[in-house]
Length: 83
Length: 83
Image 1 (cartoon, rainbow over the protein chains, first blue to last red):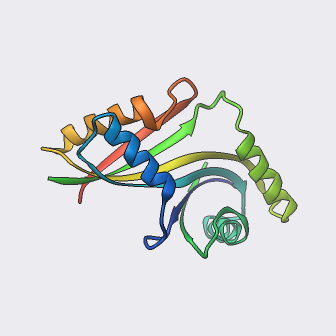
Image 2: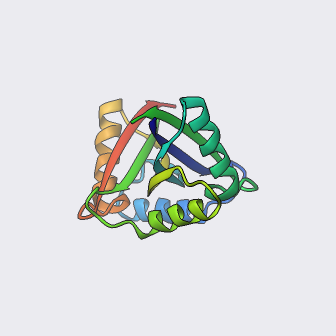
């Protein structure tokens, strides 16, 4: 069966986010003064073959641990749906 | 009122995604042969003040048009919830 996976990789809350701070500064400079915080992460969409939804979830979790996220400073969330 | 916004910025489907292709190659090299496609996008989380949810949505849409997304090659989605 084919599944599509959405992966959200975000910096852990205690980790400084210079990219987010730069975006925040840019938004303020454009007049969007109401913005208080910005955090920037990654959003990956994958399609994969697996025997079932839980097998797909397990595979994508493993991909996150090994390549997609740096788990020292980042956390990830995975959502699977059949495609 | 304070709102939190999730912004998903993705390359349009017809646009080539070299970063996604590199990740796909990396996953195959690690033995994840079942992965067929990978697309890489951005995931931003913002907190902002606005008078209501629709005003917040309007502001964040405007931020996407002006700074967060390059609408020539990228599309974006915004989700607002009260924080």
